[in-house]
Length: 480
Ligand code: FAD
Image 1 (cartoon, rainbow, N blue to C red):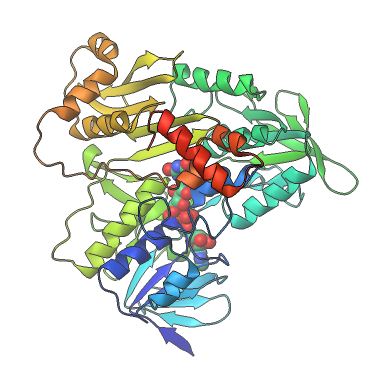
Image 2 (image 1 turned 30 degrees about the vertical axis):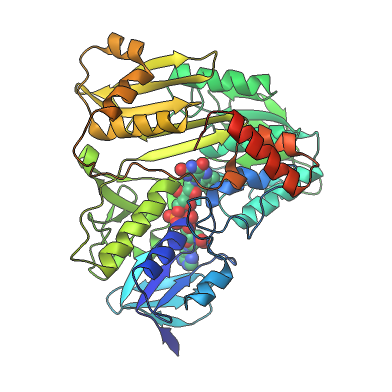
């Protein structure tokens, strides 16, 4: 026995939520669309888990951050799906897929068939065990990929107030969790093997700024080494971590953020894979005509760079989902996905955005003391990437637009001197209509506003918080 749908979205994360919204906009009929998700809740804005969710005061909780909150879109609560006749099959893992027969088998034994499948299975957090370190069972070793992880982290965090946390990994998750833990008054040591934080994106100069900022907030850095083993107490809890350099750090809590692996296993041997993900064309269509893939799991052609990339960022999940649904519902009208890679982060009172690609030579600009600074990346004589911390909305839009135009750059010293003015000038020049949508709605003022605003709001009723935020928002340069 089983059910049949015209459209099935496999996975219930960010991309699934945005795809569902687009399906309704393109006229999907009640009963035609189903979302199957291993998670027990409707799709939500995953980035909130390392930001608003971990705050000590008025933390973000569902339903406040269901997709597509903050993007000037509707917030898709379970009620919304019901009203639109979209079937949510939650808490249900799909254990096999037969793309030839167009059928899925769930862990509960149900067969669900489809005409069109949209794969939005995202990725899973890499585990220490995969690097030969035991400790998965310890209750105070935390990962952060989904709501269950976030709840677990909050529980451990609350049980070790003023204690010691060791954060393993100096990437996004490590940096955001370290900031959140410090805000929760936990003593944080960040351990990673690279020479500086955010090594895949930051230059040493940019990284130095953030590391000094974190250190001023009490966060310690142990660089150039990795965790090799744990020390456990008699109850099986981790009490210290051993590092390869021979040192030992006391730990009441360990957060591991060592990267992710796309969830492709259901499709190995059935669909073409590339760059660790499921290969799609410019319509987000896989090697099987009836199957599309979006979000973290999809490896798609990035026109701007002339190559296939797999991105692990929320903006790409949102936009690829929207594009795939347009391609499914209006195949004749929809063109190739033309995407400018964009990612951002917010920690403490800081906020940065990055557009494009960080290849070639980096040219720094701006004033580190005032907190507004950035870098351009120049490759083969053209601007290909831009980073900006502390910018205004207009400045972020300018670097996005300038990067999408890939203007020629001859004199790097001159570019450094011009700094933001370079992007502002380029972006104001009359241009033919941009093929790329460079508008970026970073989700959720309520969820992701810089964290010091939450300090200010501590202990104040919600109305006062909103008023306070509005005041702050009005006084400061706009960041969204
Ligand atoms: P996901 O949102 O991961 O959703 C995948 C879904 O598929 C999950 O619900 C999963 O349970 C389900 N699933 C997988 N396999 C199966 C199966 N077999 N059966 C049923 N269901 C299945 N990006 C940024 O750009 N900026 C940020 O600040 C930022 N912060 C982040 C903070 C955290 C804590 C995390 C974890 C990620 C963050 N990201 C950020 C990345 C961003 O959230 C991801 O790029 C985005 O969630 C990808 O969306 P997706 O829909 O492809 O995958």
